[in-house]
Length: 176
Length: 377
Image (cartoon, rainbow over all chains, first blue to last red; front, side):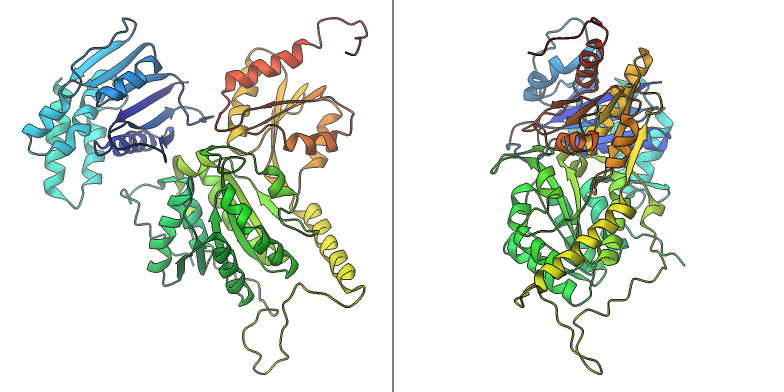
């Protein structure tokens, strides 16, 4: 019986909610129980927004995550807020384009991904979240690369140009 | 014949499941149930429901109104219901308080309606975090006068769909307002919902010969809650009570898990019940006999189920996201035969399975400390 708890965090516009939804959908397609929980309401502009995703072999008691197995942080305030919320031995994926400092803790794995720079070199800063998704899939193997790609294909079935861009972003992330 | 659900939110039509928030799922369930008017006024954490209806109702050629206030919304629902249409409104705690006058009138006029409350922390404006502090309001009538409302409490997004559809059916069947009660977590979180849950059922809606549809060719119908003739109101209220008795008899719903040999029965509803269930399962792994009763109807409360398990269980532990409201109903049902303990979080605090486990162990360990009669303190 396995349960993976993932927190995605960043500022508004970085595709944090979407990244969480993509992860939850991947879990759902794999026949797992999934939940997705957003931070809602009183978030401030420039501050952090986050979504919490649980993928499990059994029923999910609460969609609220206290300690996460994996945390994806896309900006500095998110790192400050969530570094302490990663389980011992867990993984933190950080957007090194926007986070100069490093992880203080020694008991978690830190993966640095220049997601924003990669996205901007691909021509669209908005796909930084998909770069991070690629890094997540490559580092944690929560789903296979092919399953993730086939989901992207379904997501962008009617938008060929966007599909190519997102596939590129994903593959760049995989390479990290 | 069933019509396939048309869900603009679904980006992955191949799947048998759709990932939806509780708010959206309740909206789509209402559409599937044939809701013809939705009126609402924005408030977090149920805004996505109003937003969803603003798209879907228009797509379906039905009526969506963002009203100027909660009072207007509930009275628009009243108007649609008087005319025989299925109608719904939704809000969150402070907004539901504002709707109470209208809900009382709906009960007094015996008009069907569905009212969704995605609860937030209180009292007052409180906060927007999840809470279950409107239990008293939902189960004791809520507004003025001697009435009750059926209150349905889903614990998952998929169950929110089932119970919203049921709410429309019960409202028509018993001619009265029915509440669907959730908290911020249920409204905001996404879970997979089987697409088939939204299939349009072919079964005919109940005829509404009492509705105000124009009196052409028949005697005028009168809908009112004013009874001035001496004795008339008492007679009407007795009729309401007979209806409530019938509802208690036929519509009480609950789920039980691991109760058969349980020594400690945890009682919890909605989001809290999922967490409590995990706690009960963890306790079982430690050979501690814990079970769960989850009321699905908060009113009528499953008091017979509580009485039944009280025969074998040693004690109850009620867990709520409030400072103790449903615990009174459990005490009433247990009638002093078994001790009823309580653990609550409020103001946005969400209990973890570990917290509940700890509380349960505290209760259970007191049974084994000593066999000597204990002095009361």
